[in-house]
Length: 471
Ligand code: AMP
Ligand code: ZN
Image 1 (cartoon, rainbow, N blue to C red):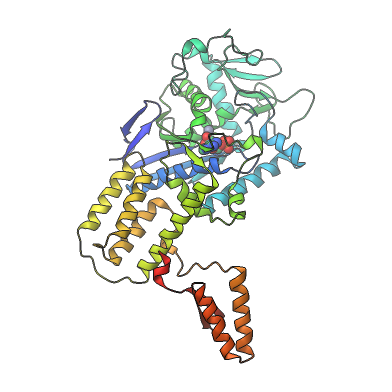
Image 2 (cartoon, rainbow, N blue to C red):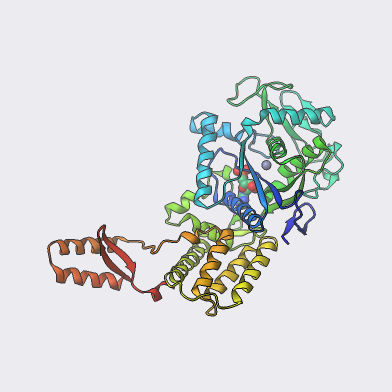
C-alpha cells in the first residue's frame, strides 16, 4: 500500500484514489521568464519519482503540468511587474517569444534528466476563458471585490478555513493587521484574481474581461486548469514547499469556494535545494542551471542521481563536493552494471532476489523513500549470493523508478583526454609509416593509462584495460 505524506493533514496516509487504480496529478509548472535552476529541477525530479512509483504500483496516471506564461508577478503578493513582461523588456524580445523560448529550454531539461513528460501540458495564456469563468463564479458567490486601477481581489476573510494548508493563524490575517500590504486590500492574504492593464501603457499580454482589459492572477490559472483536466476534486497536487503558504493556500480557497467541494485529496511538497543554507532564487539571476553543470563536464543524470540520495521532504545541500560524490557513485554504479552485463551467466538460484525486490517495494511505497531504495539496490548488486542474471533483472526493474537510464548503459564510457588523444594519433601515424615497434611502444603507454587499443574498420577504439580497474 502506497503511503504519502499529506501536507494538509501533516500525516503519512494510505493513498486512496478517487477512481480505482487511477491517479490524477497536477504539478505546478515553471514560470517561463528564465531558465529553470537546479533547485526547481529537484522539485520536478521528485514529482517524476512520485509518478514512477504510482506507475510501478499499477496505477493509471493522468499527469497535468501548467506553463505559467503570464500573471506571475515579482512578489508572490500581487506586487511588482509581471515576470515574463519584465524579462521581455530586459532581453528586448516579445513576451510571447520569451515565454516560448524558456518553455522549450525547460522541456529540454526534462528530457536530459529523464523526467517523464506530463500527459497534458497547459499554458495559462491558452486558458483565459476558463480563468474568467472561475472568477465569475467567485464574484456571483460574493467573494470578490475591486480595487480601482488595480484589479479584482479574493476576500480571504470570508472563508472560515482560509490558510488551512499552511495552518495560518486567522488572527494574523485580519484587515488592519500591522503588517503593510497593497493599498486597497482588505486583508493581507487577499489576492488578485484579475489584474487591470495599466492606464498609461499597453501590456503585450492582455485580454478583455467583464471587469476590464487585463490579465489573470497567477493562482487562478492553476485552479482553472487543474479542475478542467482532472475534475473539481482530484487526487494529488504537488509543488515546492514555498507554495504552501500562498500559492496553494489561494488555489484551495478559490477552488473550494467556486465548487463547494474539496479541491485536492493529497498535497505533496518537495523540500528545497539549498546552497550552504542559502536560497537559490531564479529572480536573483545568480543561480545554477542544468547547463551550468553540463558546462563543467557533469552528465545530466549525475544530477538526477544526486537528487535521489536525499528524501524529497528533506533539504538537500548543493555543493560541488556533494555533487562530485554523487557523480563518483553514479560512475561506480554504471561500471558495476557493465561488469554484470558483460558476464550474464548463472540462472535464477536464490530466493534472495525476491527479498530485495520486496524491500525495494516497501521503501518506495513508504512515502517515496528513494534513498533507502538506492541502498537496497547497491546491496543487491554487491551480493555474491545473486547471479548476474538475477542482478540484471533487478537493475532493469528498479530503474523504472530511478530513471537513470541503466537499461541502456553503453559498453564503454571512455573519456579521452588530450594525452590519450595525442598518443592515439601518434600510434596511428606510426602504423601508417609501418613503424611497428614504435606503434607497439605507444600501445604500451596507453595500456599504462588503463586502456587498450583495438583496431577496427572505423579506426582505433579504446577499451578499459581490465574489469578489475572498473570498480
Ligand atoms: P517557479 O518556476 O518559480 O514557479 O518554480 C518552479 C518549481 O520549483 C515550484 O514547484 C517551486 O516550488 C520549486 N522551487 C523553487 N525554488 C526551489 C528550490 N530552491 N529547491 C527546490 N524547489 C524549488
Ligand atoms: Zn500552481
